Each structure stands twice: as C-alpha cells, then as structure tokens.
Length: 324
Ligand code: PBG
Image 1 (tube, protein in one colour):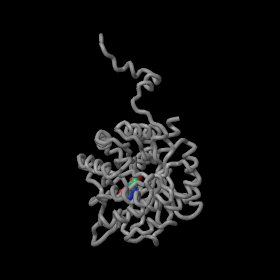
Image 2 (cartoon, helix red, strand yellow):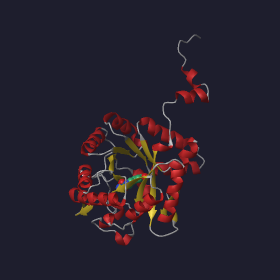
Image 3 (spheres, protein in one colour):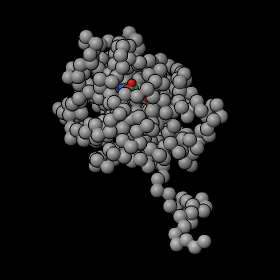
Image 4 (cartoon, helix red, strand yellow):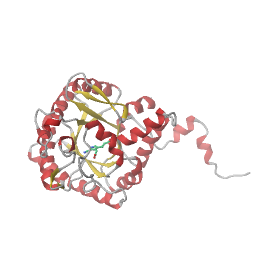
C-alpha cells in the first residue's frame, strides 16, 4: 500500500507525541478551591468529596504554604458560616472580622505572594441557602447586588486580590467594579462566573458548606443547560461591565460553551471543574472502574483544550504531582 500521508508517524513514540502535543498542563493553570471552617485543628473530610477537606484556619494556612511550594499560585476561598450567623440579609458576609476576612488576612500574612480569590455570593450566609435575598419566595436582584458590593469591598479591604462573584444576579459586575473604584480598591480584580449553569453536579459542594437551597432551586438565576447563545451574551455583558476574567461552570458538560466563550472574548477564560465532577471520578476510581490518575489528566487536558486558560479544580495537587 502506498500512502502519501501517514498520520501515525507523529504518534509513534512518547518523544514525538510530546513534541507535537497541542495542549500541556502546568501548575500555573490551576486555581485551588479551599473550604474553611471555624475552630482550631479541624479537618473534616467532605462526605461526598473523598480526599477533600473543610479545614480550620490553622490547617488552611499550612495547606496554602504547601500549595505554594508545589508551584500552585492561586486559591479560591469558600467559608462555612456558623448557623447562628445566617440570616436573610447576608450581613455576616461583610463583617470585618468574619471568617472570610480573617482567612484572607491570615493567608496573606503566611504566603504574601499567593494570589487570593474569594467567592462572592450570599448562599453560605443565607438562612434560605439561596444566592440572594429572598422575599415572598423570590430572589431579589437589585437588593442582592447591593449586598454583593459590600461583600466584595470587605474582601478587598481584608486583602483579596480578586473577587469571584458566583451568584448570577444581573448587573453585579458593573456594580462591584464601581464599588471597588469608589472605595479606592482599584487594584482588585473581578473573576466573574459569567456562564454559570443550574447544575445537579453542585451537590457535593453544597454538602461541604451546608448551603443547599432550603426551598425551590436556583433556576431563576443560574442558566438553563439547554442554552448556548445565552452564555456568550452573559459573558460579553460581564466583560463590558468590567470582568477581568470570565468563567464557565461546570466544565465537563460544558466544553462547547468554554470554546464558544473563548472565541468570543479577549479576556482570560476560566472553567470550574466542580465538586460533582470530582466526586464522579473518585467514586468510579474507588470501585476500580477507572484509573484515577489517567482520568484526572484526561479531564483537565480536555478542559484546557476546550479553551480554558485557567481551571479551578479539586484535583490541583494531584495534577501537579502527575505532571511532574
Ligand atoms: C454558590 C457556589 C456554588 C459553587 C461555587 N459557588 C454552588 C451553587 O451554586 O449552588 C459550586 C462549586 C462546586 O460544585 O464545586 N455561590
């Protein structure tokens, strides 16, 4: 058989495959989500996220040092709010001495150059477990945005590098940018969860923070997974309003969206490889049904190949070890 072109030539050995690989993972691709709890010497494994923990600040600081030494350069902070501090205004979210604010300060002091991003949304602080202020069974948009502005400024004041609004209220990026400017936090950036879908795959995360919605679901603010054009609309509006980085979330069922967004914007695109995506790999691996290490690399590479410049993932540490 005579063939003019033989594609397998470039697949013959590890050497040539690595020479022509189009996508390569590196530690600086990853954002590490951290779940922080009150108290001391606490490290609780999350039931639906085997191998992932919710930790008190002392352990969290140690962890951040370790992450830094592994070459990881950014963390995304989430806190578990004590029940007695939850209400329907979210005011604990901008308490100067709240757990989030103390965490930002402690991490900044321990690892000054770590890039600190913070989750901005009311759900951990809400008695209803919703991302917004609730009235008569509805999630109020504009009142919630005002709360998010206060929350963002409070994180900035504590020393956050970038706030990450994950709530999907309309107009919050513009309002947060304006709030930061007015309070002289012009150096603080915004990573917007621009295309965040109402997904069943957030389940384990809600276990981690005890933040499941008390009534209904999040479909009046998070996007319908049937939609694609809407993701581009949302993202372009956020860029217009001042988002420095945009995000698609979840990642795996949304690789097409990541690519659409990547092609549509001129800012870095991040993707969130979320809790349910982590849990599925862990569960299948625990059953011996898939090879965990291979699955991690394949999944993360596919997210990057789809167009993500940054990936928030619970597999960051494992991935760094595997890349080495
Ligand atoms: C809530 C928030 C969620 C996640 C990040 N911020 C869950 C939700 O919207 O209910 C999910 C992260 C994950 O599942 O890993 N503001």
